[in-house]
Structures are given as C-alpha cells and as structure tokens.
Image 1 (cartoon, rainbow, N blue to C red):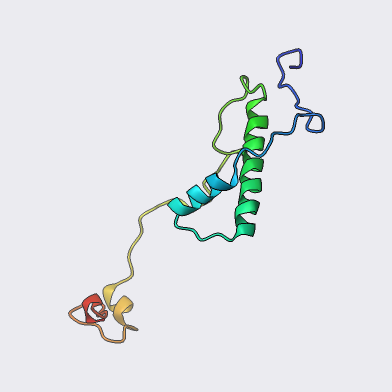
Image 2 (image 1 turned 135 degrees about the horizontal axis):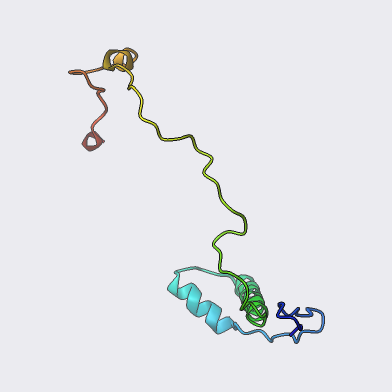
Length: 115
C-alpha cells in the first residue's frame, strides 16, 4: 500500500496469475440452467473468459478503495431535455383531419382481437 493514504497500485506484470477458477463442469452446469447448447469449443472459451472476469474482480478487490466515494456514473449527468411545460393541445378537428376513418370524434384503429 502506498504511503499518504492513496490507493495502492497493483503491478499487473508481477501480480500472481490466478489459475482457471471456472472449470468445464461449472460452465456446463450454468449452460444447462440457462438452457444453452454450447459446443466443446464454446465451453472451453467460456471457462477461460469467465475465469478472466473473476481474475479482474480479484484485482479490483485487492485495491485500497476506502477513500473512494461510491458512484453510479463516472461523470455528472445533466438533464438535456426541454422543460416539461403544459401548452395548448392540437384541436380535435385538426388532429382528425388526416385520419383515414375517424368515428365519433376519435381515431378508429383495428381491434387487437380481430387478428
């Protein structure tokens, strides 16, 4: 850990390599639960990729993050939408003017039960 309260830097070059933590049987078990059909090559690929993800999680867990504030976004978000201000609606006769088959002052739409 670095002095001065800063986060310790993990030397990725000299960090011990974690053995494959997800084996073939675990991949097959999860694939079965998810009802996925995987080829032998895909099972091997997934075992390696999932093990790599867990290796990254271990590296992050090894960091001193006590002074790091929890965030949901790395940058501040701003509302870029216009203000929600009420205004006059389009008159009904103008809205229905281009409707193909208006009925009783409303739009006629196909019935979902008609299909």
